[in-house]
Length: 427
Image (cartoon, rainbow, N blue to C red; front, side, top):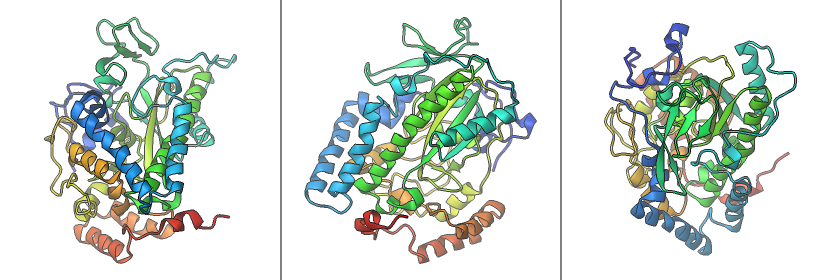
């Protein structure tokens, strides 16, 4: 893995974390000088709003979903239907958008009055511990902290209402120095104060203890994914308000404002998998990511190498079961497949258009790659053994052996009865 420092056209907002002994996501994925901040408009989730063909194709998903439900397809029963729409109803109630910044539930500013005692006198370490405790109280499953690398902030955010993109600037850029609070200007430009140099990254599991994940691609699995967002929404909002109550600024965000995966990597919460998703060392890709930008100084550990890149090179279980071949079998590349991939980042590129096409065909957001992933495991101690070897020994033959054993155990097969999910006993 190339950890060589490079000069960057869009440098981080803080001193090089290398001086603290930290490895960054940009170093881990060999970000090139040619890299420019990604425009959210090019994300497939945005293209489905402004691009007529993609919008038309996406409309087929709900039609297919209803057809499969009416036919009684396994995983599309009334219980799965109700789970999906019950979870989504909370998102609607909170006016929570996965992709739109500064909505009611992710407002950049608040009317909350800070504590009358003023900002607490705490060290970065103490503040991190307080914030971690608060996040878990509010419903987070895992929490990490990172120094903000501006390269991961979108160059432009996409507005679903106007179907246009608008710049995201920082207050130390020319012409924006007068803004000391997060703000949206009249021309649509959003400004982030230069003091907001830290990011709180929060993970929410979906398919608790693996339940439901093995039913992908089905509406049941999609419902569990939506439920993770429904759990995320109040957690994200309350944690942002908690930070503001301490006298600091906070910008809560789901999939908007910045690329979530590299921020999660910088927070030590995982690495990028071949399937284009974050792989967390504890729950694999069964998680949804949110983040909060803040000026509250926090203790950060940097990116952690769990051996996932080498393992994904040997594994490739997700490749043959991808319905349209959206997941590549070859090596990582710096070159994008199309505009939905970032340029100048050493990673496996996923064909987002093919992925969307298959989702529309099966009537769900799929997640077959998550089911097939060898990291998709329940929280059992026995799995700590292979993960120890994966992290500490990068031998291809040994990683292949773990994959072979995973297949022999039947993990990732699509052979579950949905009654097993609903009728499983709970104490």
